[in-house]
Amino acid sequence: MNRYMEMAIEEARDGIRKHHGGPFGCVIVKDGNVIGRGHNRVVVNHDPTCHGEMMAIRDACEKTGDFNLEGCELYTTGQPCPMCRGAIMWAGITKVYYGCNVEDTERIGFRDNVFYHTDFNKMEVELEREGCLLLYDEYMKIEDRTMY
Picture: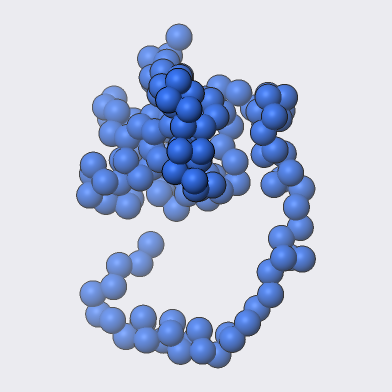
């Protein structure tokens, strides 16, 4: 078994045993070193964003002092959901390895599949664009801003 996936599985097991959330664990690796790890903490944190991948990304960013994780690989027990995919992309992670797919996750009672078929255009409404554009203009005037 791949040693990093084995670590992700153990991370997930730890979370399950502590009743933190579902069977989702993750490790992030750079140059052969694990720089981040996490497991699903949705239940214990009362926070739907605390997926294993999100926790591992937060851990890696905290440890490296950087939001840019380019050149890193992510190992996770379940195929990343759209939220986690977005975070993975924002972090610049280069490669993702997953164990179980979306269908496997649905089989054990998780509803990830619905997010691939939802029309978000029906949920989103543009509001107060002019005021928000002024805010964006204010941001652009800051000389030492960090943009990603």
